[in-house]
Image (tube, rainbow over all chains, first blue to last red; front, side, top):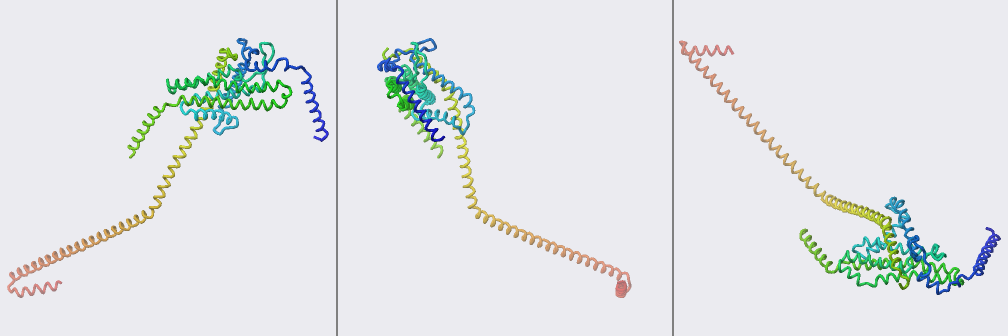
Length: 288
Length: 159
Protein backbone atom coordinates (compact mmCIF):
# COMPACT_ATOMS: atom_id res chain seq x y z
CA UNK A 1 0.00 0.00 0.00
CA UNK A 2 1.45 3.38 -1.04
CA UNK A 3 1.84 6.26 1.39
CA UNK A 4 -0.87 8.28 -0.36
CA UNK A 5 -3.38 5.44 -0.16
CA UNK A 6 -2.57 4.94 3.49
CA UNK A 7 -3.22 8.59 4.28
CA UNK A 8 -6.55 8.50 2.41
CA UNK A 9 -7.62 5.39 4.28
CA UNK A 10 -6.77 6.94 7.63
CA UNK A 11 -8.72 10.10 6.79
CA UNK A 12 -11.78 8.07 5.70
CA UNK A 13 -11.55 6.02 8.88
CA UNK A 14 -11.35 9.18 11.05
CA UNK A 15 -14.26 10.83 9.19
CA UNK A 16 -16.47 7.77 9.72
CA UNK A 17 -15.64 7.72 13.43
CA UNK A 18 -16.32 11.48 13.81
CA UNK A 19 -19.60 11.16 11.88
CA UNK A 20 -20.70 8.33 14.09
CA UNK A 21 -19.78 10.25 17.24
CA UNK A 22 -21.67 13.29 15.98
CA UNK A 23 -24.66 11.10 15.23
CA UNK A 24 -24.56 9.60 18.71
CA UNK A 25 -24.39 13.02 20.35
CA UNK A 26 -27.07 14.60 18.20
CA UNK A 27 -29.65 11.80 18.23
CA UNK A 28 -31.93 11.86 21.28
CA UNK A 29 -31.12 11.64 24.94
CA UNK A 30 -32.21 8.08 25.66
CA UNK A 31 -30.36 8.04 28.96
CA UNK A 32 -32.30 10.91 30.31
CA UNK A 33 -35.66 9.29 29.66
CA UNK A 34 -35.04 6.85 32.48
CA UNK A 35 -33.17 8.24 35.48
CA UNK A 36 -30.05 6.41 36.64
CA UNK A 37 -31.78 5.47 39.88
CA UNK A 38 -34.47 3.63 37.95
CA UNK A 39 -31.93 1.91 35.68
CA UNK A 40 -29.90 0.68 38.62
CA UNK A 41 -32.95 -0.43 40.57
CA UNK A 42 -34.30 -2.35 37.61
CA UNK A 43 -30.93 -3.97 36.92
CA UNK A 44 -30.92 -5.25 40.49
CA UNK A 45 -34.52 -6.16 41.08
CA UNK A 46 -36.06 -6.65 37.61
CA UNK A 47 -39.35 -5.35 38.96
CA UNK A 48 -40.55 -3.74 35.77
CA UNK A 49 -38.87 -5.60 32.93
CA UNK A 50 -40.27 -9.07 32.56
CA UNK A 51 -39.91 -11.65 29.81
CA UNK A 52 -42.43 -14.32 28.96
CA UNK A 53 -41.21 -17.91 29.44
CA UNK A 54 -42.87 -19.98 26.68
CA UNK A 55 -45.98 -17.87 27.20
CA UNK A 56 -46.52 -19.55 30.58
CA UNK A 57 -44.97 -17.23 33.12
CA UNK A 58 -43.67 -13.68 33.14
CA UNK A 59 -40.18 -14.09 34.51
CA UNK A 60 -36.96 -12.15 35.07
CA UNK A 61 -34.68 -12.02 32.01
CA UNK A 62 -32.06 -13.99 33.96
CA UNK A 63 -34.23 -17.09 33.83
CA UNK A 64 -34.46 -16.89 30.04
CA UNK A 65 -30.66 -16.62 30.00
CA UNK A 66 -30.48 -19.72 32.18
CA UNK A 67 -32.61 -21.79 29.80
CA UNK A 68 -30.72 -20.52 26.76
CA UNK A 69 -27.41 -21.42 28.43
CA UNK A 70 -28.77 -24.91 29.16
CA UNK A 71 -29.84 -25.19 25.52
CA UNK A 72 -26.38 -24.17 24.30
CA UNK A 73 -24.79 -26.61 26.72
CA UNK A 74 -27.12 -29.39 25.60
CA UNK A 75 -26.28 -28.88 21.91
CA UNK A 76 -22.57 -28.69 22.64
CA UNK A 77 -22.68 -31.83 24.83
CA UNK A 78 -24.73 -33.74 22.27
CA UNK A 79 -22.36 -32.90 19.42
CA UNK A 80 -19.36 -33.77 21.57
CA UNK A 81 -20.96 -37.05 22.70
CA UNK A 82 -21.94 -38.16 19.20
CA UNK A 83 -19.06 -36.93 17.08
CA UNK A 84 -16.03 -36.50 19.32
CA UNK A 85 -16.09 -38.81 22.34
CA UNK A 86 -16.28 -42.04 20.28
CA UNK A 87 -13.17 -40.84 18.41
CA UNK A 88 -11.17 -40.02 21.52
CA UNK A 89 -7.58 -41.25 21.35
CA UNK A 90 -5.05 -42.31 23.97
CA UNK A 91 -2.90 -39.34 22.95
CA UNK A 92 -5.43 -36.48 22.83
CA UNK A 93 -5.82 -33.87 20.12
CA UNK A 94 -6.47 -30.19 20.89
CA UNK A 95 -10.23 -30.39 21.42
CA UNK A 96 -10.01 -33.64 23.37
CA UNK A 97 -7.27 -32.15 25.54
CA UNK A 98 -9.47 -29.12 26.28
CA UNK A 99 -12.47 -31.25 27.30
CA UNK A 100 -10.28 -33.59 29.34
CA UNK A 101 -8.63 -30.63 31.01
CA UNK A 102 -12.00 -29.23 32.08
CA UNK A 103 -13.23 -32.59 33.38
CA UNK A 104 -9.88 -33.35 35.04
CA UNK A 105 -9.78 -29.91 36.69
CA UNK A 106 -13.10 -30.39 38.50
CA UNK A 107 -12.44 -34.05 39.19
CA UNK A 108 -9.13 -33.15 40.84
CA UNK A 109 -10.78 -30.31 42.76
CA UNK A 110 -13.40 -32.75 44.05
CA UNK A 111 -10.94 -35.49 44.97
CA UNK A 112 -8.43 -33.15 46.63
CA UNK A 113 -11.02 -31.31 48.75
CA UNK A 114 -13.22 -34.29 49.46
CA UNK A 115 -11.24 -37.52 49.61
CA UNK A 116 -14.37 -39.53 50.46
CA UNK A 117 -17.33 -40.01 48.13
CA UNK A 118 -16.27 -37.57 45.44
CA UNK A 119 -17.73 -39.25 42.34
CA UNK A 120 -21.00 -37.34 42.41
CA UNK A 121 -19.34 -34.17 43.68
CA UNK A 122 -17.03 -34.08 40.65
CA UNK A 123 -19.98 -34.17 38.28
CA UNK A 124 -21.84 -31.54 40.30
CA UNK A 125 -19.04 -29.02 40.48
CA UNK A 126 -18.23 -29.59 36.81
CA UNK A 127 -21.80 -28.66 35.94
CA UNK A 128 -21.90 -25.74 38.37
CA UNK A 129 -18.54 -24.42 37.16
CA UNK A 130 -19.52 -24.72 33.51
CA UNK A 131 -22.91 -23.09 34.21
CA UNK A 132 -21.45 -20.11 36.05
CA UNK A 133 -18.67 -19.65 33.49
CA UNK A 134 -20.77 -20.01 30.36
CA UNK A 135 -23.69 -18.10 31.92
CA UNK A 136 -21.47 -15.15 32.80
CA UNK A 137 -19.76 -15.10 29.41
CA UNK A 138 -23.22 -15.28 27.84
CA UNK A 139 -23.87 -11.76 29.13
CA UNK A 140 -21.17 -10.45 26.79
CA UNK A 141 -23.14 -11.52 23.70
CA UNK A 142 -25.97 -9.13 24.57
CA UNK A 143 -28.73 -11.35 23.20
CA UNK A 144 -31.86 -9.25 22.82
CA UNK A 145 -35.28 -10.57 23.78
CA UNK A 146 -38.68 -8.89 23.74
CA UNK A 147 -40.09 -7.85 27.11
CA UNK A 148 -43.71 -8.10 28.18
CA UNK A 149 -43.92 -4.32 28.14
CA UNK A 150 -43.14 -4.23 24.42
CA UNK A 151 -39.47 -3.22 24.41
CA UNK A 152 -36.38 -5.37 24.21
CA UNK A 153 -33.76 -6.20 26.79
CA UNK A 154 -30.23 -7.48 26.57
CA UNK A 155 -30.11 -10.75 28.47
CA UNK A 156 -28.01 -10.62 31.65
CA UNK A 157 -26.04 -13.47 33.23
CA UNK A 158 -28.44 -16.06 34.72
CA UNK A 159 -26.89 -15.62 38.14
CA UNK A 160 -27.19 -11.85 38.08
CA UNK A 161 -30.83 -12.63 38.83
CA UNK A 162 -31.28 -13.07 42.57
CA UNK A 163 -33.63 -16.02 42.03
CA UNK A 164 -30.98 -17.79 39.97
CA UNK A 165 -28.31 -17.11 42.58
CA UNK A 166 -30.60 -18.39 45.37
CA UNK A 167 -31.40 -21.48 43.30
CA UNK A 168 -27.71 -22.15 42.81
CA UNK A 169 -26.88 -21.59 46.48
CA UNK A 170 -29.72 -23.82 47.67
CA UNK A 171 -28.80 -26.55 45.18
CA UNK A 172 -25.20 -26.53 46.40
CA UNK A 173 -26.38 -26.67 50.01
CA UNK A 174 -28.67 -29.61 49.21
CA UNK A 175 -25.80 -31.43 47.53
CA UNK A 176 -23.65 -30.88 50.62
CA UNK A 177 -26.52 -32.08 52.82
CA UNK A 178 -27.01 -35.20 50.70
CA UNK A 179 -23.27 -35.92 50.99
CA UNK A 180 -23.56 -35.57 54.77
CA UNK A 181 -26.53 -37.96 54.92
CA UNK A 182 -24.87 -40.60 52.74
CA UNK A 183 -21.46 -40.25 54.39
CA UNK A 184 -22.22 -39.78 58.08
CA UNK A 185 -25.98 -40.31 58.53
CA UNK A 186 -27.37 -38.13 61.37
CA UNK A 187 -23.98 -36.67 62.23
CA UNK A 188 -23.57 -35.57 58.62
CA UNK A 189 -26.95 -33.87 58.66
CA UNK A 190 -26.08 -32.06 61.88
CA UNK A 191 -22.73 -31.03 60.44
CA UNK A 192 -24.47 -29.57 57.41
CA UNK A 193 -27.23 -27.86 59.38
CA UNK A 194 -24.56 -26.27 61.58
CA UNK A 195 -23.63 -24.17 58.55
CA UNK A 196 -27.20 -22.97 58.02
CA UNK A 197 -25.98 -19.63 56.69
CA UNK A 198 -24.19 -21.35 53.83
CA UNK A 199 -26.98 -21.18 51.21
CA UNK A 200 -27.51 -17.48 51.96
CA UNK A 201 -23.81 -16.64 51.80
CA UNK A 202 -23.32 -18.67 48.64
CA UNK A 203 -26.35 -17.17 46.93
CA UNK A 204 -25.61 -13.58 47.79
CA UNK A 205 -21.91 -13.91 47.02
CA UNK A 206 -22.77 -15.07 43.52
CA UNK A 207 -25.52 -12.52 43.10
CA UNK A 208 -23.41 -9.64 44.35
CA UNK A 209 -20.37 -10.56 42.31
CA UNK A 210 -22.19 -11.03 39.06
CA UNK A 211 -24.54 -8.13 39.57
CA UNK A 212 -21.65 -5.78 40.28
CA UNK A 213 -20.36 -6.42 36.76
CA UNK A 214 -23.74 -5.72 35.27
CA UNK A 215 -24.19 -2.56 37.35
CA UNK A 216 -20.78 -1.12 36.55
CA UNK A 217 -21.27 -1.82 32.85
CA UNK A 218 -24.72 -0.26 33.04
CA UNK A 219 -23.29 2.82 34.72
CA UNK A 220 -20.53 3.15 32.18
CA UNK A 221 -23.02 2.93 29.33
CA UNK A 222 -25.41 5.37 31.01
CA UNK A 223 -22.97 8.25 30.78
CA UNK A 224 -22.01 8.76 27.19
CA UNK A 225 -18.64 10.34 27.99
CA UNK A 226 -17.33 7.04 29.38
CA UNK A 227 -19.09 4.74 26.92
CA UNK A 228 -16.16 4.53 24.48
CA UNK A 229 -13.22 2.11 24.90
CA UNK A 230 -13.73 1.92 28.67
CA UNK A 231 -16.56 -0.66 28.41
CA UNK A 232 -14.10 -3.05 26.77
CA UNK A 233 -11.93 -3.06 29.86
CA UNK A 234 -14.90 -2.94 32.21
CA UNK A 235 -16.52 -5.82 30.36
CA UNK A 236 -13.35 -7.89 30.60
CA UNK A 237 -12.76 -7.02 34.22
CA UNK A 238 -16.28 -7.58 35.48
CA UNK A 239 -17.44 -10.35 33.18
CA UNK A 240 -14.54 -12.55 32.17
CA UNK A 241 -12.78 -12.37 35.50
CA UNK A 242 -16.01 -12.85 37.43
CA UNK A 243 -16.86 -15.80 35.23
CA UNK A 244 -13.61 -17.46 36.21
CA UNK A 245 -13.43 -16.33 39.82
CA UNK A 246 -17.03 -17.10 40.74
CA UNK A 247 -16.96 -20.48 39.00
CA UNK A 248 -13.86 -21.31 41.00
CA UNK A 249 -15.13 -19.90 44.31
CA UNK A 250 -18.49 -21.68 44.28
CA UNK A 251 -17.07 -25.03 43.19
CA UNK A 252 -14.23 -24.77 45.68
CA UNK A 253 -16.58 -23.88 48.55
CA UNK A 254 -19.02 -26.63 47.65
CA UNK A 255 -16.28 -29.26 47.46
CA UNK A 256 -14.69 -28.05 50.71
CA UNK A 257 -17.95 -28.22 52.66
CA UNK A 258 -18.86 -31.50 50.98
CA UNK A 259 -15.49 -32.92 51.98
CA UNK A 260 -16.00 -31.73 55.54
CA UNK A 261 -19.41 -33.33 56.01
CA UNK A 262 -18.51 -36.61 54.27
CA UNK A 263 -15.30 -37.10 56.24
CA UNK A 264 -15.61 -40.16 58.48
CA UNK A 265 -15.63 -39.35 62.22
CA UNK A 266 -12.25 -39.66 64.05
CA UNK A 267 -13.67 -42.61 66.04
CA UNK A 268 -14.36 -44.48 62.81
CA UNK A 269 -10.91 -43.65 61.44
CA UNK A 270 -9.28 -44.78 64.70
CA UNK A 271 -11.24 -48.01 64.57
CA UNK A 272 -10.22 -48.61 60.96
CA UNK A 273 -6.62 -47.70 61.77
CA UNK A 274 -6.58 -50.12 64.69
CA UNK A 275 -8.08 -52.77 62.46
CA UNK A 276 -5.44 -52.12 59.83
CA UNK A 277 -2.66 -52.24 62.41
CA UNK A 278 -3.91 -55.64 63.62
CA UNK A 279 -3.90 -56.85 60.06
CA UNK A 280 -0.35 -55.65 59.60
CA UNK A 281 0.80 -57.43 62.76
CA UNK A 282 -0.88 -60.64 61.61
CA UNK A 283 0.71 -60.34 58.21
CA UNK A 284 4.09 -59.72 59.78
CA UNK A 285 3.69 -62.73 62.03
CA UNK A 286 2.65 -64.93 59.14
CA UNK A 287 5.58 -63.75 57.11
CA UNK A 288 8.21 -64.46 59.74
CA UNK B 1 -41.21 -10.73 48.68
CA UNK B 2 -38.28 -8.37 49.31
CA UNK B 3 -35.63 -8.00 46.61
CA UNK B 4 -38.12 -9.38 44.11
CA UNK B 5 -37.39 -12.92 45.29
CA UNK B 6 -39.86 -15.27 43.64
CA UNK B 7 -40.05 -18.86 44.87
CA UNK B 8 -41.53 -20.04 41.57
CA UNK B 9 -38.60 -18.57 39.67
CA UNK B 10 -36.13 -20.01 42.17
CA UNK B 11 -37.69 -23.42 41.50
CA UNK B 12 -37.58 -22.80 37.75
CA UNK B 13 -33.86 -22.00 38.07
CA UNK B 14 -33.34 -25.15 40.12
CA UNK B 15 -35.28 -27.22 37.58
CA UNK B 16 -33.07 -25.79 34.85
CA UNK B 17 -29.96 -26.59 36.81
CA UNK B 18 -31.01 -30.19 37.51
CA UNK B 19 -31.73 -30.55 33.79
CA UNK B 20 -28.29 -29.15 33.03
CA UNK B 21 -26.73 -31.54 35.52
CA UNK B 22 -28.40 -34.51 33.80
CA UNK B 23 -27.23 -33.35 30.38
CA UNK B 24 -23.72 -32.72 31.62
CA UNK B 25 -23.47 -36.00 33.51
CA UNK B 26 -24.85 -38.30 30.84
CA UNK B 27 -23.52 -36.62 27.73
CA UNK B 28 -20.24 -35.04 28.70
CA UNK B 29 -18.75 -35.54 32.15
CA UNK B 30 -19.62 -39.24 32.54
CA UNK B 31 -18.33 -40.48 29.15
CA UNK B 32 -15.20 -38.32 29.30
CA UNK B 33 -14.46 -39.44 32.86
CA UNK B 34 -15.01 -43.05 31.85
CA UNK B 35 -12.58 -42.66 28.96
CA UNK B 36 -10.01 -40.97 31.20
CA UNK B 37 -10.33 -43.72 33.81
CA UNK B 38 -9.91 -46.44 31.20
CA UNK B 39 -6.81 -44.71 29.85
CA UNK B 40 -5.45 -44.34 33.37
CA UNK B 41 -6.01 -48.06 33.93
CA UNK B 42 -4.34 -48.84 30.60
CA UNK B 43 -1.22 -46.92 31.63
CA UNK B 44 -1.27 -48.38 35.14
CA UNK B 45 -1.45 -51.91 33.71
CA UNK B 46 1.37 -51.07 31.32
CA UNK B 47 3.39 -49.64 34.17
CA UNK B 48 2.72 -52.72 36.30
CA UNK B 49 3.76 -55.05 33.46
CA UNK B 50 6.92 -53.02 32.86
CA UNK B 51 7.77 -53.13 36.56
CA UNK B 52 7.24 -56.89 36.67
CA UNK B 53 9.43 -57.35 33.60
CA UNK B 54 12.10 -55.17 35.11
CA UNK B 55 12.02 -57.11 38.36
CA UNK B 56 12.22 -60.39 36.48
CA UNK B 57 15.12 -59.23 34.34
CA UNK B 58 16.93 -57.88 37.42
CA UNK B 59 16.49 -61.23 39.11
CA UNK B 60 17.70 -63.07 36.04
CA UNK B 61 20.71 -60.79 35.78
CA UNK B 62 21.57 -61.41 39.42
CA UNK B 63 21.21 -65.18 38.86
CA UNK B 64 23.46 -65.10 35.82
CA UNK B 65 26.01 -62.96 37.59
CA UNK B 66 26.13 -65.44 40.47
CA UNK B 67 26.42 -68.31 38.03
CA UNK B 68 29.14 -66.51 36.12
CA UNK B 69 31.14 -65.85 39.27
CA UNK B 70 30.85 -69.54 40.26
CA UNK B 71 31.63 -70.92 36.83
CA UNK B 72 35.47 -71.10 37.45
CA UNK B 73 34.96 -73.07 40.60
CA UNK B 74 32.44 -75.27 38.86
CA UNK B 75 34.87 -75.97 36.01
CA UNK B 76 37.66 -76.89 38.49
CA UNK B 77 35.29 -79.20 40.38
CA UNK B 78 34.16 -80.87 37.18
CA UNK B 79 37.75 -81.21 36.00
CA UNK B 80 38.97 -82.82 39.23
CA UNK B 81 35.91 -85.07 39.23
CA UNK B 82 36.68 -86.17 35.66
CA UNK B 83 40.35 -86.79 36.49
CA UNK B 84 39.38 -88.78 39.57
CA UNK B 85 36.87 -90.79 37.62
CA UNK B 86 39.37 -91.50 34.82
CA UNK B 87 41.99 -92.57 37.34
CA UNK B 88 39.53 -94.91 39.07
CA UNK B 89 38.53 -96.34 35.74
CA UNK B 90 42.16 -96.88 34.77
CA UNK B 91 42.92 -98.63 38.01
CA UNK B 92 39.89 -100.82 37.59
CA UNK B 93 40.90 -101.75 34.05
CA UNK B 94 44.45 -102.58 35.13
CA UNK B 95 43.16 -104.59 38.07
CA UNK B 96 40.78 -106.50 35.83
CA UNK B 97 43.57 -107.15 33.32
CA UNK B 98 45.85 -108.44 36.05
CA UNK B 99 43.17 -110.69 37.43
CA UNK B 100 42.43 -111.95 33.96
CA UNK B 101 46.12 -112.63 33.28
CA UNK B 102 46.46 -114.37 36.60
CA UNK B 103 43.45 -116.52 35.82
CA UNK B 104 44.87 -117.38 32.39
CA UNK B 105 48.25 -118.34 33.87
CA UNK B 106 46.53 -120.38 36.55
CA UNK B 107 44.41 -122.10 33.95
CA UNK B 108 47.48 -122.81 31.81
CA UNK B 109 49.30 -124.17 34.83
CA UNK B 110 46.41 -126.38 35.68
CA UNK B 111 46.20 -127.57 32.09
CA UNK B 112 49.92 -128.38 31.95
CA UNK B 113 49.76 -130.21 35.24
CA UNK B 114 46.80 -132.14 34.00
CA UNK B 115 48.63 -132.90 30.75
CA UNK B 116 51.71 -133.96 32.67
CA UNK B 117 49.75 -136.25 34.90
CA UNK B 118 47.96 -137.66 31.91
CA UNK B 119 51.26 -138.37 30.04
CA UNK B 120 52.87 -139.87 33.16
CA UNK B 121 49.83 -142.09 33.69
CA UNK B 122 49.85 -143.04 30.03
CA UNK B 123 53.60 -143.81 30.13
CA UNK B 124 53.13 -145.85 33.30
CA UNK B 125 50.32 -147.76 31.71
CA UNK B 126 52.43 -148.33 28.59
CA UNK B 127 55.40 -149.52 30.68
CA UNK B 128 53.15 -151.78 32.67
CA UNK B 129 51.76 -153.16 29.44
CA UNK B 130 55.26 -153.80 28.15
CA UNK B 131 56.33 -155.34 31.38
CA UNK B 132 53.33 -157.62 31.57
CA UNK B 133 53.76 -158.57 27.90
CA UNK B 134 57.44 -159.32 28.43
CA UNK B 135 56.61 -161.33 31.47
CA UNK B 136 54.12 -163.30 29.51
CA UNK B 137 56.70 -163.92 26.79
CA UNK B 138 59.23 -165.04 29.30
CA UNK B 139 56.82 -167.39 30.83
CA UNK B 140 56.02 -168.89 27.42
CA UNK B 141 59.69 -169.34 26.19
CA UNK B 142 62.31 -171.73 27.46
CA UNK B 143 65.01 -169.30 27.99
CA UNK B 144 63.43 -166.26 29.19
CA UNK B 145 66.55 -164.29 28.85
CA UNK B 146 67.10 -165.24 25.24
CA UNK B 147 63.47 -164.68 24.45
CA UNK B 148 63.68 -161.34 26.09
CA UNK B 149 66.64 -160.36 24.01
CA UNK B 150 64.98 -161.57 20.84
CA UNK B 151 61.88 -159.69 21.61
CA UNK B 152 63.82 -156.54 22.38
CA UNK B 153 65.84 -156.96 19.20
CA UNK B 154 62.66 -157.41 17.28
CA UNK B 155 61.13 -154.28 18.72
CA UNK B 156 64.22 -152.23 18.00
CA UNK B 157 64.15 -153.43 14.42
CA UNK B 158 60.56 -152.45 14.13
CA UNK B 159 61.28 -149.00 15.29
